[in-house]
Image (cartoon, rainbow, N blue to C red; front, side, top):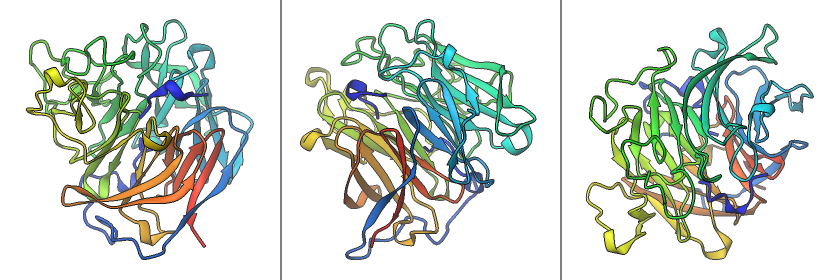
Length: 388
């Protein structure tokens, strides 16, 4: 199970119905202020899992996929957890603390090509590895032998800050959030190193073999800079989310000892620098070298008061079951276990709300094909519902 030192920050998959760059205004775009007295609750959905860390539903076919940290992807079909894993690569995964199998992203054409991508730390030394797999003739079982390496980077010196999320953006590029390499204070200086994949959000075109670098990535062709990088200055972007209808990207980046942060930007803004390790949230991390020129500040950050320690980013709600919260972004904290939300409006976090719900060890959120919201808490999955 991921434990407290995680300093962690399921979007990874924008429902395919929302995955077009051209999706424009809908009835919930931007959201509306919450009605007075409106409440939410979380209902039990699935139990019996072992250290789940991610959830996604690529197709509207009754199946939900849940990633278990030890190296398995489980199938929930019509509300029932299936005994046979969809994928089991546990023999190849180094799991524990912040390491393990950390997420899955299904190809936008998954219904026809059956490709999906996983992000894990390797059994041999903990390096980060992103691979593609394919299902068998049985749609509920993938073939481990179809493994194809997409990209890898060393991460053996520290066990923490592995990042962990893969996501297809509205542009259908594959994004990967990588932590700074671990340790306290970015000892390897990866956060501001444009020649290091660590401490970055990567953007890859996986129509190539195994990938190509999109020509509009910000550092293409620049000496001493990796072309795969889309954004820098991240400490541990454990979870981020594309809000395709509103053309926004939310990045929840885990802080050091003082601040947790949420960044909100347009997803086509290339080359942004989110500040680590010059900044921690909205404050200087090292006051003697705190030059904030060119840095993108968070839309929201919070302190470690009341037991908070590590942000767990969620999603903007676009479901139909709870119309009052459409357009609101939800997040939690691994230690404090709260459920909070805000509505992004005019460059600020409006309608900030603590829903008065406390959960245990929140490792991730998830959305289903219909846009309904789930929370992974301990070994259980909860579903967000309207209160009474």
